[in-house]
Length: 260
Image 1 (tube, rainbow, N blue to C red):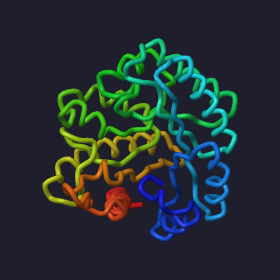
Image 2 (spheres, rainbow, N blue to C red):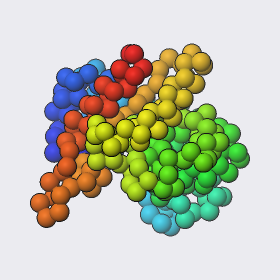
Image 3 (cartoon, one colour):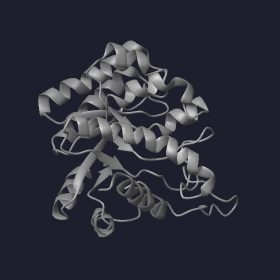
Image 4 (spheres, helix red, strand yellow):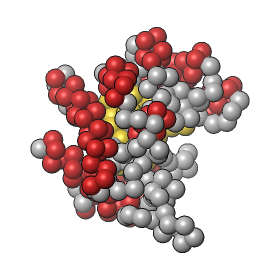
């Protein structure tokens, strides 16, 4: 729904269904989750719901995170994609939140994945290594565009760090980042060919791992964002590309690359 907030869930569902998406990933507030679930079901679309903590006070953050996860899980989405913790929380605090998610997953039977994202415990490839080593059951949503931005590189000098993450990544956000930002202006442009290929090789590796494990499916969200993430012209704030067209391109690009 990111970038389509001006549409109703019903309008958005019909639009994504018409161009061949299988589902939607939605950040729905407590008052919208029932509607989102019903609309996706009515349109034959799969649904991933998102969860966030709240606030800089750890105790308040943990309570909101726990309550949100429990409520979201009651709608039985495919899984929950969680923005977990903060980069300024201690390892012990973030680990407590990850354990909270594990407890909710065990209680409800709904999988919870933790997105690699700036500002979270998972904000960079090096920062997440201790978590991966100490918390072997941790599962990720791979949005490595953030790591490229944080590292100001395509991570070629820390392949081992990325490979550890690939080994536990179960969902992909196929946005393409670059060393100075989390989103290239248009992945179709020839100047971003190497950036696209760098990310696609990581996605290939995640897919290969799933295929070797005979996993029934691998989910991918085309997550190029709207103006703000998408660069705009000064003064007019006119986006330099169409967010919708870019995301459809990413869907078609991966389907062609993977022959699906």
